Length: 395
Image (cartoon, rainbow, N blue to C red; front, side):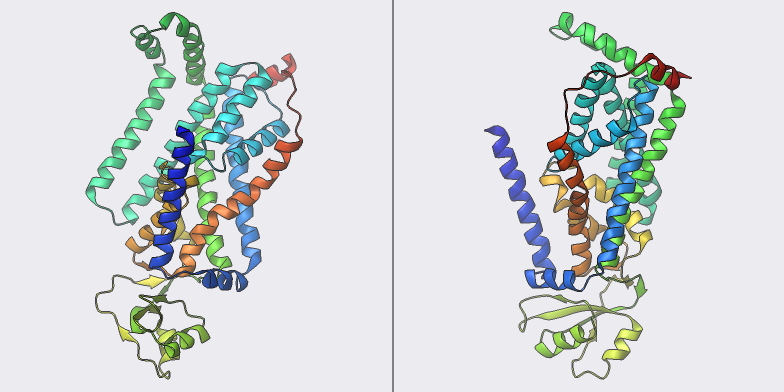
C-alpha cells in the first residue's frame, strides 16, 4: 500500500511539473503533432545511436570492474543482462532497477553474490564521480549562486571520501558492525564484503578506466538532447534580440509563414507574443504589418541549441533527474534543462522543451530490446566460470 501511495505521488508530481512547463511555453497537442510532423526523423535515429553508444561504454565499465574481482562473464551475457536491467529500470528513479538486476543476475550466474553486489556498489560511486568531474568542468560556464556551488563541492567531496574509504579502509565497516545489534549474523557477510572492496586496491587501472568509460557514457547521453534538437529543427546558436508583439492572428501567421518559433504569453488575441529574432529574421519581417518592439529588459543573447550547450547543462540536468520526486525524472529533466539554458543567455522556445521531453522516449525506445530479451531469455543457467577463463582474467 505504501509503495502504491509513493508511486501515485510521483505520478502526480510528474504530471503537475509537465503541465506547468507546457503551460508556461503554451505547448498544446497541436504544437507537439506539428513539431513531430515537421521533424527530421534521421536525427532521431542518430539520437538512438547516441543511447546505444552510452550503453556500450556502460557495459565496458561494468565488465572491467567485474574482471578486477575475478568474475569472467561472456560479453553476450553481460549485454543481455544489462538490457534487461535497463528495461526493468525504466520506471525507477536513478536506475535502481538496472543496478539491482545486474547484481542479482551476475550473482546467480557466478555464484559469487558478494563480489557482484560490491562491483555494482563501487560502479555507482564511480559513476557519480565521473558525473562530478564533468560538473567541475562545466560549473564555471553556468551562472549559479554561490550556495549551490558550495553544496555541490560538499557532495563531490563526500562521494570521493566514501569511495576512498570503501577501497582503502573498508575494514572500518567491521568496527561499525561491532556496535550494532545482530552483529553475529552480519559479521560473516560483512567480512566477505570488506575483502571484496579491498580487492580494488590492486585494481587502480581498472578503476581509472571505469571513470573514463563513465565520462564517455554521460557525454553520449547528453548528446541525445542535441540530436533531438536537430530532429525538431531548432537550429544552431544564432545571436539576435528579444521582441514582443500583440498576440493577433496576423502576427502568428506571419511568424508561422517564416517558420519562426514564438511563445504566447497569454491566450491568443488577449496577450503578447514573445519571439527571439536574428538580424536576418528581423529584416524578413520588416515589411510585415505586425509591429515587433524590442524587449529592453532581455537577458538573452542568442537562440538555438548547440552541442556545446547541451554538454554544459547536461551534468546538472542529470543530477536533477536523480531526485526521486517524479517517474524516471520526467518533468525535472525538462525544468532543469530549460532553466540552465536560460542561465546561459539562450532563449528557449517550445521545441527546446520538447527536445528535453523526447529524450526520455528516445531512451525508452532502446529498452524494447531489453523487454524482448526479458520475455524470451532462459534464466535456469548455472555458474559457468571455468579455470581457463579465470586465468585469462588474471593474466
